[in-house]
Length: 203
Image 1 (tube, one colour):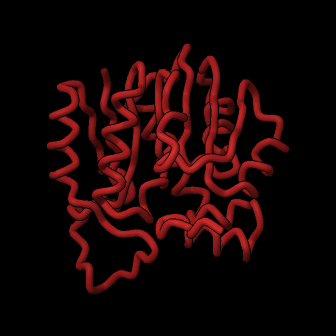
Image 2: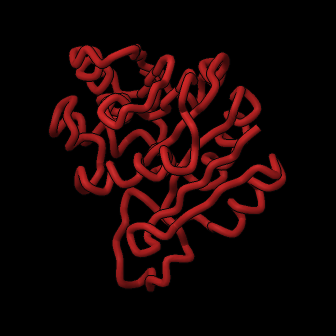
C-alpha cells in the first residue's frame, strides 16, 4: 500500500472519524469558509470561466458560486479523499464535476482550466511544497490562481496558539513570489482580523 503523504494524514484521520462531511474538511466553522470564498469572488472574476478547485472537499465553493449568482462556465473539483468526492457528486451541483486526485503528485490534472483555486488546501502542507504547487498551478492556468493561507503577519504570538495540523506561512515571501510570477497580483488579509491571507495571481 502506498504511504499516505504527511499533508493528507490529518484529512484521512478526519474522514475516518466523520466520513465525507463538512467536519472532515477541517474548517473550524462554515462562516470562516464562506468568508474566504467571498474574498476570492471579490478579488477575482470567475465570470464565463472554467474553474479547477483543488482540495474541493464536498464541493462547497461550487455551491457558493451558484448561490452568489456567479456566472461561471464550469467547475471541476478534485480532492485526495474519495469519501469527500463521493459526497460532492451526490449533491448534484450545477455545472460541476468531481474527481479523486492528489494534485501534488498528479500535476497533469492542473491543465485546461481558466482559474485554479486553493481554499484551505495548503494549510497542512510544508510551505515549500505549497509554494511549488502554486507556481506549477499558475503555469497551467489560463487566467490565474486564487489561494489562501494562514499569515505569519497576523500580529499573534505563535506561542499562544495551536494551529495544528496547519501552520502559518511567510506572507512577505509569498507576495514576493507572486510578483515574480506576474505583476498582476492582488492581496488581502483585512478579513478575520488578519488571521488569514488571500492571494490572487493573474496572467
